[in-house]
Image 1 (tube, one colour):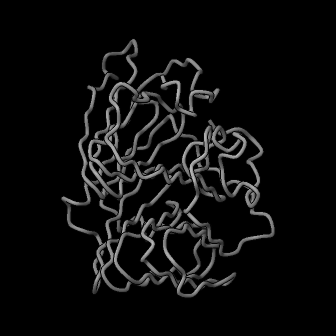
Image 2 (tube, rainbow, N blue to C red):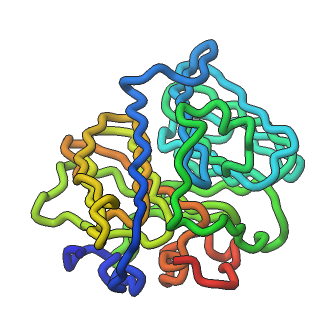
Length: 302
């Protein structure tokens, strides 16, 4: 159900007709601008939320903050769309010093320290294998979604695990959807900054059969709409939902809910996150900007 101008219209995974059985899970919602942070420090605040496979930490920064991981089991991502934020990252497989913002970093497993300086927002993404981080989340316990299969990590990167930095200053290109990066554990799509509200005559209601979509809003006002399938058992039915959120916020859109999003302010920035990476996005030529670094999974993930 995409407008003709939407690059996702050609995705075969979106065109399959499916039937589903309940029970169904609702969304997880964090309106960070209206809720107390889970972590605070001198010059920074952090909100943390989880979904089935991911932990999201959103940091509002006015100074300096340092976040360390000891014995991290798998890769994680750190990014900021704010050019004035500076990064110092130390890992056992590479370092960067005084690195500019508007970049996305993939941090290797093992010990690492990320120091961020300046004023802006920084997002950290980990898998829920990090039990200590799950415990800090606003929602440490969530219902198991029967439509989501067990997590499977994708193949190791070309040349082995190391610190990788990717510039977010990527021009738009006809036929490509956003700015997509993946690693072994997750995929991030940093959509372009929109400078007008979304045309309500060109929305994109769709569903995912077996994975969650984490929508992280960094700037502007948004409205998420969700509708679940009807089954023969009315006990499975869920009412339609209309979620309004300012920024920053996180909304976890669960399978198999039909969903679409409106941005309603003049300037908006939203990031879509998936774990593990999406196979349909990954097999579209040119969509994943760091595809050369990360091989495809050996089996299809829908």
